[in-house]
Amino acid sequence: MKKTSFAVALIAALTAAPAFAAPSGTMYKDPHCGCCDAWAKHMQDNGFKIDSKIDAQMSQTKDKLGVPGSLRSCHTAKIGNYLFEGHVPADLVIKVLRDKPAIAGLAVPGMPLGSPGMEGPTRQPYQVLTFDRQGRTTVYAQR
Image (tube, rainbow, N blue to C red):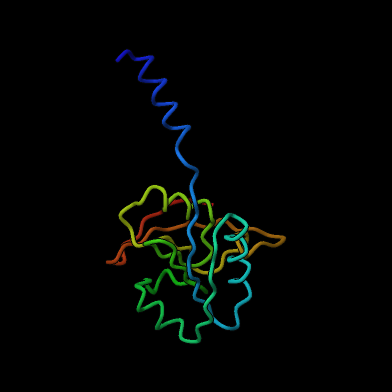
């Protein structure tokens, strides 16, 4: 096969690939948290179907799911085979679901201003971290 034929075939295959279909997920949240609902709306605005579960025992739920203590925020979502802790941007959730890295999930520890669901007049830079089942973390993105 000539190089040009291969390139044409590759371009055709890539452009014919189906668009990413964002799956549904479940968000566990404290009954008194409003920013969790704002994050769920951000996800829904980006094509996700998020089922919200009120949970008055969030610490136990996070323990059961395997969210490391140092990464915890106000809500935890399970989407596909991954966990998303806190105000993780939808584009990074999509990237993880597409790329399927060998991680347990992504986390935005705390509640940084300017992250999805925490929008307002000020914005602070924050990191999105990966975590695995052993609790090891790496920086996935800077926002």
